[in-house]
Amino acid sequence: MVGLRRFLILTHRYLGIAVCLLFVMWFVSGIAMIFARGMPGLTPDVRLQHLPVLDTSAIKVAPSDAAEKAQLERPPNRAMLLTVMGRPAYRFSIGGSTTTVFADTGDLLEYVGEAEAVQVASRFMNLPATQLHYEGELLEPDQWTLEERRILPAHKISVEDDAHTILYVSEETAEVALLTTRGSRALAWFAAIPHWMYFSPLRQNGPVWRQVVLWTSGAATVLAVIGIVLGFTQYSTRYAGLMRWHYVTGVVFGVFCLTWVFSGLLSMEPFFWASSDGTGDRIGQALRGGTMELSHFPKLALATADVKEVEFLRIQDEQYYLFRADSFAPLLVSADSSQIRRDHFSTESLLDRVKKGNPDVPISESALLSSYDSYYHPSERKPPLPVLRVKFADPEATWVYVDPHMSQVVTRFTRRQRLQRWIYHGLHSLDFNFWYYQGPVWTGVMVLLNAGGATLSIIGVVLAMKRLTRGIRRRIRTSAVRPRSVVGA
Image (tube, rainbow, N blue to C red):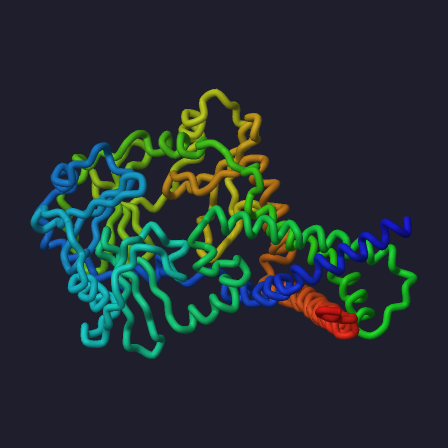
């Protein structure tokens, strides 16, 4: 028993020396993450604010003719009408590729060089081109495009403004795809980058980054488990000084250290245990009623001057426009009657199509929710309410959430994904309903717990440094008194 306890003490000591700095980094950046969230980017709302108003009077080409000129291999997954380089244009997306056709001439967008990118950035910022500086073409991700590699290749442009803005203009879409400011970049260096270990030399190699996170969080989990065990076995030991404070903070905050590093480990999905199939895609297709038919959309002519973007949709066998603007909420308009649809699609019609999308599996329960539940909950962009929750009696116990206004699948969860939600978000963010929706309460508790974990870790760093310093001095003294052999004796 004594031998086992000594083994645990030594393992905890030297494993702590190896990873204590990581604990400090994770806890301090965890406090920053509560306020800064993730990496800087361009939100849909900010993007829409900077989009110019659509000039429908310049549209000469119908959507179906534009699709023909684009020579699409199959009907697009998404089709939109917006302003590109100061001209109305159709944008068709198939998988991960995008094709843009100008709606005034039918020409394809083929090349976006330095001059074109600067003009795009100038319009976006509403600033003269003389206040913009071209930084070069980006073919490989830098620190700020690690999560946005899909926008590459892109042109990087800096702006002479108070925020020290940097823009990334995608060569494929001729649109500003990413925006960072000096403030957002600074917050990321305190928050997301250290917390997720998003250092560009490491993160650029995805498999290596994943293994580093798995092994470091795994070692940290073992360290935390041993620390909790020692909290019980060393109860009668009279520690003094920093060791006493390390013991006390470990007893108080050790469990949270364990839950956070263990849930961080599981966030990487070791062995990809929470991956699932494409049930939601089949249901989404059934809700649409088939592929989009662009021939059913006439050439658009709007009386309003506020619309900035139009999306073409197929919903329950009918064609709709979705108008987006700053001055009003998104409007769903029938392409046949031009009538605005404000009512939700009936629950009966939604359930009928959901069944068609998953015909071999019975529905065990369905409910129209007017508030968020433990799995369908708000993020930075709140998902729509009400929402239809459908539970299937399949082996994976799949739950699907459907937006009744758009007749679209918003999200889905299998049993394993719901379990992952609890062992990751539940343990990592403590987002339990009874206080997560009470913002200040959750924020205060999270800051307190992270501060406690940081204190425990900082004390561990100091003790580790003292241990290493003593070891180095001991080696120096030993080598200094060691007798030297006499050459030629």
